[in-house]
Image (cartoon, rainbow over all chains, first blue to last red; front, top):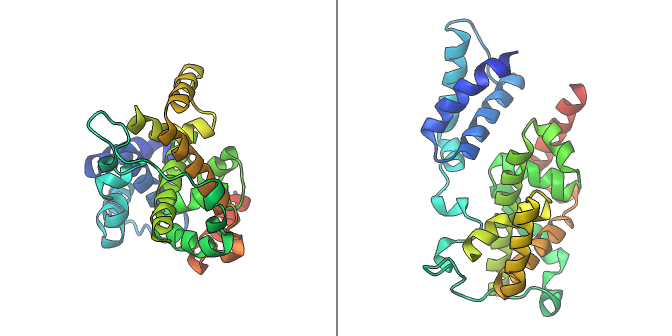
Length: 175
Length: 75
């Protein structure tokens, strides 16, 4: 099968261009997605492998992807590293969101904010968050739909949720 | 350590930690009000995302979702 044959080489190539394994996997998945959706057409002017690799490198390098694949280092952390001291302990106390802030967490106010936050997520993260947390599907279902491993699904879920938490926190501090 | 603990919240909530790691994580939470607050904030975030209705999604996000479902069913 095509995927089995080219997955390894594609991953190695992607990995050489980006900061983490998860990001490399994302780029490879996007490449397959483009092929499957018929966005990319193989015209036989080069070998299939060359064609595939070119799509992959274009995806990684293209202006649109640059932001997605070369996210600043901070965004690979659940929490901005500057909020921890040298021992890795919280340097500033976290607000409690329960009880008194529950009124402030009124859905009508936050849904539009979360929605724009969702739009700003890399597409794979958004897809996982939408399927899991908006649609309420199980992780197994999401893995089947997106064709990703459960480990990769958890990474995407983690990145997406922690990013959206940051957005809510920033907004709550404004209130 | 807090900076490592926050990276485990999703695996914790997903039940993906080993028994030993889960115990260590829970012991840390008991000793650390800030990480406890962090976990609460993540749970609250999930709850709020759950209040987004598929109809609220932007047209792009909705089209993406429809496409995913369509392809999944056709496989």
